[in-house]
Image (tube, rainbow, N blue to C red; front, top):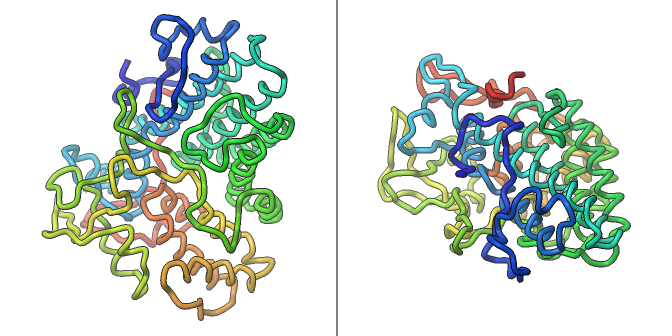
Length: 438
């Protein structure tokens, strides 16, 4: 089954994906097709190898649909254009000529389905560890803490893109209701707490390898990733005290390397996938073109513009849209994509401090500014001025990473976006797919 092109699928019919990643070296017991064993084979007396393959499958499907989700939201937020063969990328997503978003099109169904495919794999892992005697109780807690944290991560992405989420999907024949943003984030927060409890008793090491989680591949270090996600949920929920508390247990380091954090990794290995956000420079087709406003609104000397974009030899255009720059965010087609990094945590910390300690918020903002080649902030110390500056730094630090559409929506600023063509409209969330029968 092709999990990436099949569009009209609802959660009930999502199958699990038991896939191999070229960057994990595994050994297998004798069995037929060890990368895709039957579902029944892992739900009853699964071996450690089978459980670890499920972990691989979870990691693999976390990457599914990321490119489309990122370029879709980035287009709607006027960060970029995706110039390719599909006119919906420059039509529907920009509301061309009064168009409305289609709840049965790839840009709505693929991100939804991709996120729930990863959740499905994680739920299968949770069921499998409860039906096997092959692991100890501590090892079980490690698998559980990993799976629940990933479920929470995927649900955060669903809420950001759709404004709601179906949280309870463990039983495909009895799905829970689709929850609004506040309800969904509350549920995600509880899932993260459950995961944290598991990780705290999982011992000194996992029974499984992880790819892309260098420095976060033990229960205690993975817990820091869990707390980073908890801080993000608290921030999005408006609970700044909880956010700061979670950050204190995360891998936030105000004086550390801003690039540190777990990552999605890719390879050219058989059965693996490449980074769909990488684009060949000056290619005539399939290009991520930078929205002119990202270039024009930047402060002089901001290193992020040069580091993330490149001037094309010749400007390009499509559907009465044009741009002189294209993405240079990823150097090769196997460059990793950050899941969350210290730079984002510093920005979360700054945002959480704006109301309670504006001076400290300004200090955190200046860490980001300094890393970008900019002088210290010299604006007003007011809440509104610091918030505006914070959002500006998020815009440039997190460009083309599926953040800006949600940032504008949560601050009710979507209406401030430029209209590039007469008749275009601004949308700030995807419609829930038709197949979900909301």
